[in-house]
Length: 264
Image (cartoon, rainbow, N blue to C red; front, side, top):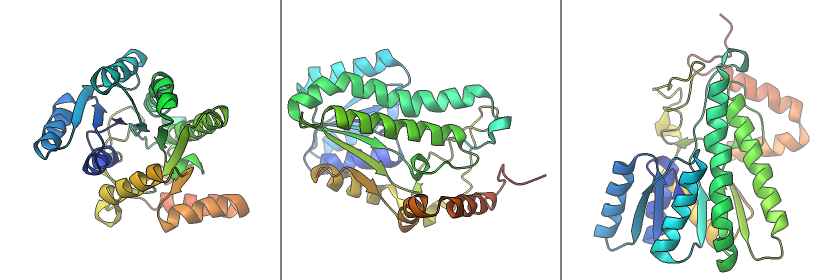
């Protein structure tokens, strides 16, 4: 089961897991897109099922799990991938922007995991959270996004600890900067979507490569997955030189086109 399966990492994961023999449940708000993807996979001899879901709505998350059980009678892997970002200084952002980011990134993970957990315990399956380096280091201009990913980490680590003797596998994956739509749909200070990415998407890790890493991490039941040299370097500096990391992070993000960190 993959949330946020209509684009980016979620879509790539759907194809990767299906190609490797999984029956995939595709969840996203855009029903037309996931139904098209489901049809594409089935036409290639794979098994797929689409369920329109807004993960910020608890009742829809419950219905998603129920639909999967009715269809396949079990859940082996839940990939909490649905997410949105933001790009604004905290003191300029509408509070609804932060609430929206938390509702999707954190509460969406909580809701789906809550209703899938009994079934995952039955299969000794996997719950995965597609997080970010922003879950290890607070990113200026992305306060709500960083907060949501830190919260996801704490939640999943606690779930892992609670079920350490129950056979549940918990994976926290931090892909690093990936070519996807998340930056285009990032919320600005007033809640509008950014539209254009401030990064050169062609230079970033392709979502398909990220999906291959995630698939292998699930199969090998890894605890964590940190991709890209920059991501690994960030986690290293966080432990041993947090002050230096903070400066490097600021200097990096202030150079972005139209960075909210730039002084007028």
